[in-house]
Length: 123
Image 1 (cartoon, rainbow, N blue to C red):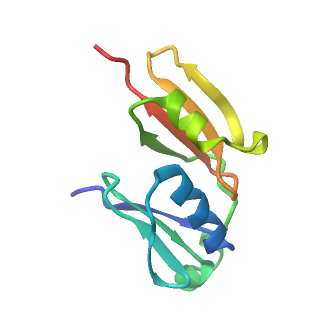
Image 2 (cartoon, rainbow, N blue to C red):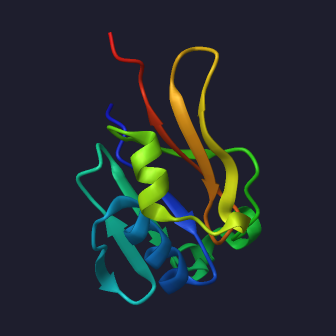
């Protein structure tokens, strides 16, 4: 078995795609207006409207997550944080060194999901 993707369900696909395009520096593939994806990140990050999971009823609720962190490993956390020039409302944690040695900066995407930009300690 291999890990394939994470799909974030949102009521505003365009807004969330714009955020992740800014974070990743990539342009999303948009096969349909209700769906976008970012490939080549180790796994696929998909963004979709509730219409793509309508058959699941209320099992998936947009912008209701408080338990998952979307993580991107970057070369230089401080440089990425500066590049993004995050709005203060997006910042959860400015660049900081974690007790286990990783350097991290945490942001909230427009739906409230936490996004971690991190780098591992250099040996």
